[in-house]
Image 1 (cartoon, helix red, strand yellow):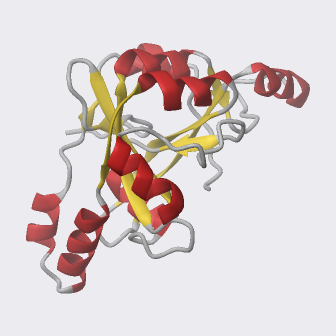
Image 2 (cartoon, one colour; image 1 turned 180 degrees about the horizontal axis):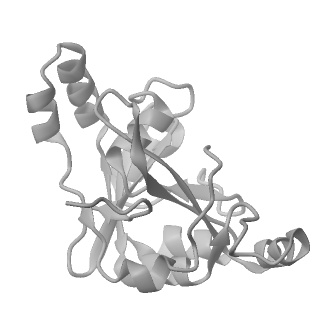
Image 3 (cartoon, helix red, strand yellow; image 1 turned 135 degrees about the horizontal axis):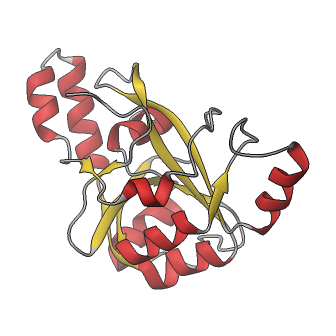
Length: 202
């Protein structure tokens, strides 16, 4: 099977999609306990959501990095996720998408969301030859995400630790069986066709 070079793969249902974030315990633990983000969650700052569990593991170092000790699986409404994609711009000026730097900067200032595509990761967190979506939310998009789109919040830090332990032990088969099932997101061509090309990692 041919793998698309830029593809949203996620755990999703008919009405929701699961994204991942990692926070310090002061935010992550109350969010998981109450099923919503606490007051300590800054709604006036950009927040990045990631549909790929393994990319989140790469970003947070299997929940070992400072300030990223609690990994959350955040189930959000698909209509909200798609609203963010429809209102997003690329996180960097991209040839073939933007006419010039000035037009990209104008779009960036106005957009409540931004997209970048970073190399997907395997179980050993090595880069794969295709890219995974990172979706940055700001302004209206952050408020909608935290207060309207969120359906459930689950602490998956124990899962992260278990998968890492299996990988460290060399039991990749068992580790792979523990991963969330991520499938291509339906209708993504219409949602991301104009959002291909960002190359910068974060």
